Amino acid sequence: MTNHDNTSPSNDLAPGDEHGSFIAGLTTNIVGLLLALLLTALSFWVARSDVLWPSGIPVGLAVLAIAQIGVHLVFFLHIGTGPDSTNNVLALAFGILIVFLIMAGSLWIMSNLNVNMIPMDHMVQP
Image (cartoon, rainbow, N blue to C red; front, side, top):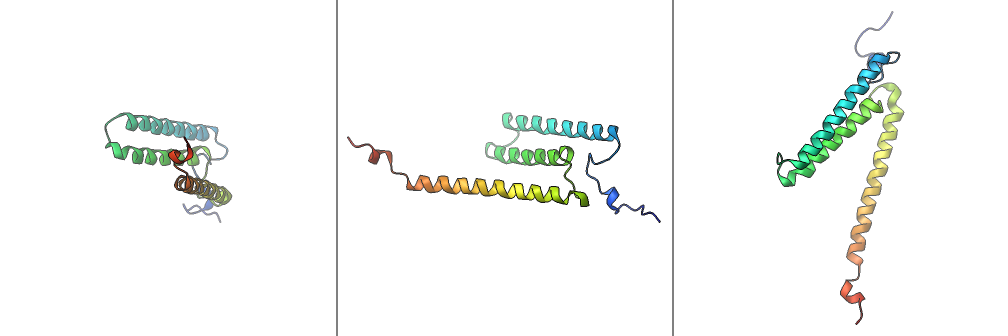
């Protein structure tokens, strides 16, 4: 007896995971490319236009950057929720953790060095 419901693991595929179909893979890559180009163009438009308040531009660019990351992860790296991509998701989570630790450590070191620096007028002895 075969399982034809929508909850079977064979139906839980990310875009681009359609095995055996060249056209489906090409279509997925083209859709991903178009989405990536659209998000890139939107980023340039947001940065150069007055559509957002000046203080909201970095937030808008951050949202578009996160969307761009999502498009690349799903359409090009094929990271999905299927049972065969558990290692990919764990590797991605570990990579995000490492990047966060490097960024937090760098900011902590820079702020600590800035507080402990000797002022320039004390360094120069006339």
